[in-house]
Structure formats: structure tokens, C-alpha cells
Image (cartoon, rainbow, N blue to C red):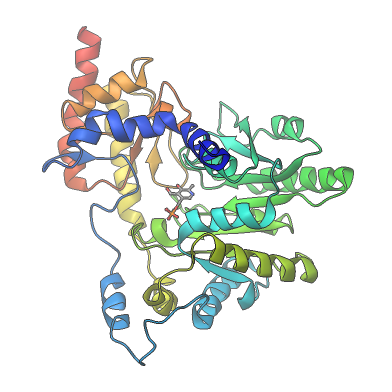
Amino acid sequence: MPASSKRIVEAFARMSPFMNFFLNSTFAREGNRPGACVFVAGDPWEGPPLGFVESLQRAAVPQNPNWFGYRNYVPEAQAAVAAGLRARTGLAYADEDVLLTNGAFAGLAALCLAVLDPGDEVIFNSPPWFFYESMLAGSGAVPVRVRVRADDYDLDLAALEAALTPRTRAVLVNSPNNPTGRIYPPATLQALADLLTRASARLGRVLYLISDEAYKHILFDGRKHYSPALYYPHTLVVYTYGKTLLTPGQRLGYLALPPDMPAADRAELRQTIFGAQFLIGFAFPNALLQYVLPELEQQHVDLTRLERRRDRFIRALRGMGYSVHQPEGAFYLLPRSPIPNDWAFTEQLAARQVFVLPGQAVEMPGFFRISLTGSDDMVDRALPAFAETLAGLNAG
Ligand SMILES: Cc1ncc(COP(=O)(O)O)c(C=O)c1O
């Protein structure tokens, strides 16, 4: 096997608990059946937000003969994103520093190629999004896992500092976090920025902070999202519209380079990321999505509905005897599995056509993850199954 194939196979093998679930569980065989209650991933079970379909329908009508030609960054789309970023953060984002991608996947892949050398270490926080470790390893970088604090899921800054080495190139954070729902507070982000500034000076090269902000608009209880870019000038923001709009199959996202990064660094990064997007396979959003991006910037999944669903689930599950914490953002619950083997527990639920993700797939053995993107009707039908499964375990 060629070395490149071996690297990919080995990198992908790091996701084996996740892949195992998607290939070998009852969900893999029965998750698509009519009547299934599916809370596995952030898939839309209640349709896109108001206006989304109309926006795409309008954009599908060509306005010139080259309407469906190649597009890398459509300037109006860049301008709409930058205006939104400026308004929300107060940072002076330049239009040209918004690099449009086909989702956060592509943004991360382009960053791996553009800013990481083989052997560079990148610290990521666990529990993580499934693909970080494999994507980093697949690009030749060395993923370094640091566990978040067990009690409140905040970053463990002491552990993070201890994980820095002369080969560290970047730290990757994700807030609001998938799967914990934690929003890192300003004090944590300031301390992280101070830590990275000190480490950069010590190491004699700038450390990047990669900020995956996929869920920055999925916030509960009136909470705010704080971008790490407010605290650390070498922050590369990664975003996808797939969560905010609940349309993950329509691939749209961006990378944003912050204005406080020195102009020469930004110019160099713009160039290398642009090149990287070509090299990984024209990783730009499709033309239609770029045309409608100014409209999509204004659209939003119904947060009140998501929050209501979160509260209903938590109330019902706690009432049954499950232990479940309350997420601040993103759209997942992470209850404790009533038995240590979370896979066995999720299979018992699956026998009742209720599908959730075993915690081992997100580095949370002993827990399970519920996506709040299942429909209310699915919740109606699933709650009795949660109660019966627990009762069955208690009786056994
Ligand atoms: C934290 C996080 N980052 C990135 C992604 C990838 O998003 P997309 O598929 O829209 O590119 C996801 C999707 O689940 C995610 O949860």
C-alpha cells in the first residue's frame, strides 16, 4: 500500500467508534425506516427556515449566460458576511478576508493544507467533533488531545499549556461546543489568548488559534457567543451555515481572517488558503448558494423551538431518572448512560426505533448524545421508549 494510502487509512481508523456506529449498529440497518425517531446527527427533520426555499428558487433563474459558470468568491457574498461579522463582533473584518468555502469541513481542510507543515502539532479539545483528529492526521499534522474539565466542560488551560511543545503550531477550539454545549466564557478566552501570546514569544513563532464557530448562532437562554478572535489576533474563524440554517447538505461556509492580524500575515494567508481551496478540489460554495448568501445571512433555524425541545427533553428525562446537564448552545444533549456500556444502551433504545449516538463515538464513553434536530413528533414517540428502556434496566 502506498504511504499516502496508509496515512489516510490510519487517520480514518482514529474515528473507528464513530464509523462503527454508522456502519454496524442497528441505526445503520434500520435508521431510515418509516417511523424511526432519529436524534443521531444534525440532520433537518422539520425543514429549513422560512425563506430558504424561495431564496434558492429565485437564484436558480439565470440572470446572465454565465450564471452557472465557475465561481470562487462572489464579492457580494463576501461583503455580506464581513458586514455581519463587523456588526456582531465590533471587529473591522475586511470583505476580502472572508474566504468562502463549501462548509466547515472544507474550511478546516484548506487550513490544514495552508498553515500546517507535516509534523506540526495541533492541540484539540476532547470531547471533539468526530473529524478533527482524522483530518489533522490525514494532512500529516500531529493531533494532540487535551481533555476539557470534567465538571463544567470548560477548557482545561493548565492541561493545554502543558501540552505545548516546540512543534505546536495551532490550538483548535469549538464554542459553542459539539457535543458538550459549553460556550467558553470571556475569562477563559482571555486566559487562552494570554497563554498563546506567551507561548508564541517563547517559541519564536506565532501560534494560530483555529476557532470552529459552527454553532455560534445556536445559543440558548439569551446567551451570547464570544469569538476567540476578540481576544487573540491570530485567530482563524471557521464557519458553516449548515447548523444555523439546518441545511447541512447545502455546502456553504467561510474562513475569516481577523483584522487585528498583521496585514502582511493576512495577505499571505489569503493567498495560500485560496490556493489550498483549489488544490483540495475547488472547495468553494456552489454559485447559487453564493448568490443568495446575503439573504441566508438573515435566516435562522427557529431557536425558540429548539430551546423548547431541549427543555422538554431535559424535564422528561430527569423525571424518569436520567442524569442530564443543560447545554448553553449547539443542539445536543449529553445524558449519562444508565449502564456503563453506552453502545449496549443505545442498542436497547434502537430496538424501540429510537436512535441516539453512543458517547464512545464522541469520546464520551458512559454517555449518549441526543441531537435536538429530531422533530417534535419524534420526541412524542421517543419519550415513552426512554422510560421503558430505563425501567427494563432497573427491573433487570
Ligand atoms: C463542531 C463542528 N465543526 C464542523 C462541522 C462540519 O460542518 P459542515 O458539515 O457543515 O461543514 C460540524 C458538523 O457536524 C461540527 O459539529
